Structure formats: structure tokens, C-alpha cells
Length: 70
View 1 (cartoon, rainbow, N blue to C red):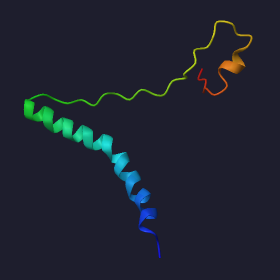
View 2: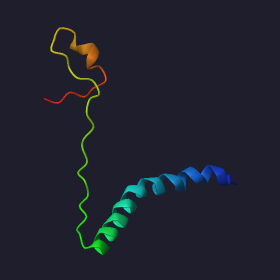
View 3: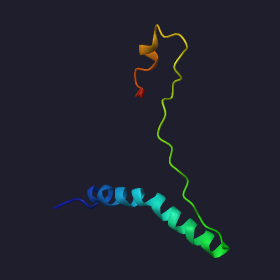
View 4: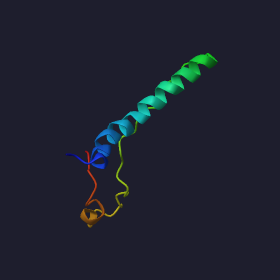
């Protein structure tokens, strides 16, 4: 027999993942009622929280956790 509390995360995660989609659907309906067109904002890819320094000698410590694209 499975505990009911153990099943809650299994159903909660998909609901939380659907919240942004539901938000955009609701906003599109509100904008449609007002006579405007709702456009989803573009998602920005995550950026490195550290700015690379001008000094290239010790860059490995600064960029240790960052993904560098060139």
C-alpha cells in the first residue's frame, strides 16, 4: 500500500510545470477581449553570473562554474 503523501509530488510537479503555459493562455484571452494581440516574451538563455575579467592570466577560477561558448 502506498502512502497518499508520497503520491503528492508525482502530481504536483506536472501542475507546477503547466503554470507558465496557463498564464500565457489566460493573458492571451484577456488581451483578445481588449482587442489586442498578446505575444509571448522571448525566453533568454541563462547567462554566466560572473563577468570575465580583462586579465586573462587567472580566468580559470572566475569561470569555473560557467559554460563558455565561443
